[in-house]
Every structure is written in structure tokens, then in C-alpha cells.
Image (cartoon, rainbow, N blue to C red; front, side, top):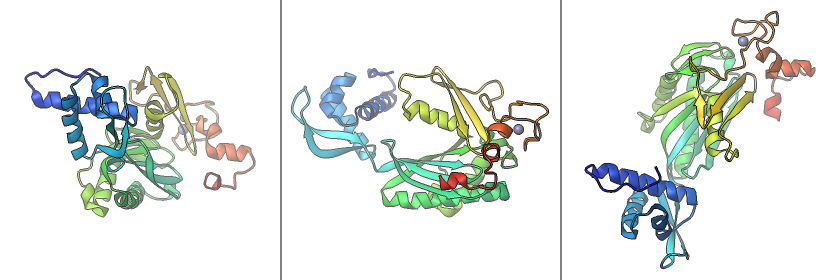
Length: 298
Ligand SMILES: [Zn+2]
């Protein structure tokens, strides 16, 4: 996978592979030079220079003014991942807040807007319209920084498959086509986002993937990620892959029944883990049940 591909019949496929290899090499290095990239990937200097020119034209790499003396050849201009241009839009809808962020190609969170509001009190369409409004605000600020969304990720507090929230007991959602509703609402506010790819998943799964790809776990590739807010969620990563399970909902431990005679849960069952370890239960057992906005004050 890290080897350059020799020219074969499909030249555009080879070039695409080599562009990706050079881009990944610059990302891994942070700051580097054409000569160092060539030495690393095993392509010639002219070949790497041509690939780098295309990546500069596409706005995926940038040059900094300083030069950098590597081991090989003359000092070269420093190359680094672009901090303008293509960016990712991340949106999390939780029970008590909505957050939208814009992340640049270096992985830096450049814009982050959070609004605390009770999403239980509104219907799914209204909540997704709120999320689109907050996302649109974040995109306006991002545009001022020269960032353009290339795709969006939607993290949702429930069981998600095929772009639809199958069940989100804490929001009272069943079979809500969240991806489509969000994309339509965002495109209505910012027509330039029409057709923007949107991917959605459970918030604990999304958080576990973020830990896997960008977190501080180092070589750890097998772990359980737990989230605890108003709901309790979990995700299992095994050998660097998210374990989805037979029905796609592996790791969702919040509605595991701890005590079949326990208190009634919003999911319709009794004695779910969330009734003991969720935010409302913890606040009640701490004698602070009347402090609903504790998380906001933290
Ligand atoms: Zn439950």
C-alpha cells in the first residue's frame, strides 16, 4: 500500500495512486521537501515534483517560504498539508446540545459552534433544521478562513443505519431519515452545499473512530469506547475495525437491562443501564436532580 505503483495500462489510476501516496507522505511528515518525499516513496524527483505541483494546484498542499536542508540534495522549499481549501464538516446532535465544527486537512478544529438546547422538546425535523442552521453558521465562519466543506459527518444519539435513525429513545425518534433531512435543510440555507456528501453514525461509534484515527491511543487498536451524557453509549473497536455486530448496533450498552424490575426507561424496557448510569440518574443520586443544566455550567 505504501509502495509507488509502476506505470501499467491504466495511467490515470497510477497517477491517482501516486498522488495519494505523496499526499499521505506529506501528512505523515507534517513538514517535508520534495527530495525527502522522493526518497521516502521511491519515485524520481521529477515525478514527485510533478505530483506535488498538481496537489498544490488542487489546494491540498501548501509551500512555506522557509527552506529546509535535508540529507539529500539542495535545500528545498518546505511542503506541508494545506490549512485552507477542502475541509470536513462535523455535526453532533445530542439530547441537550448541537455542535458543528469545521476541521481542516491538518486535522485542526478551526471553527466550533455549540448551542445548548433541549432537543427532546422539538420534533426530529425541527432538531435537524436547528443542526443545519448551526452548521450553516459554522460554514460562514469557515468560508472566511478559506475553508470549503468537502463532506459532512453527522453523529447521532441513537441506533443509526443507512442514513436513518432507527431508534433514539432519549429523543423519541423512530425511523427518522436524518441524513436526508439534514442535507436538505443545509442546502436550503447554503445552496453551495447541495450535493455535499453526508455520512451519519451513532455518536459513540463516531467518537471511537475519532479516537482510533486521531486520538492518543498510539498502537492500541482494540478497545471499548464509552460515552456518558444524558444517554450512555458504547462502541467496540477490534484490531482497528469498528465492530458493528450482526444487527449493526454492537456496543450500544445504554439499554442493556441491568435489573428487569428496575425503573421504566424511555425505550419501553425496564432497568436499563442508562437508568442507573445516565446523567439524570447520577444527578438524582447525588441529590442534584434539580440542576438540569449541569453539563452547560461545567
Ligand atoms: Zn432503555
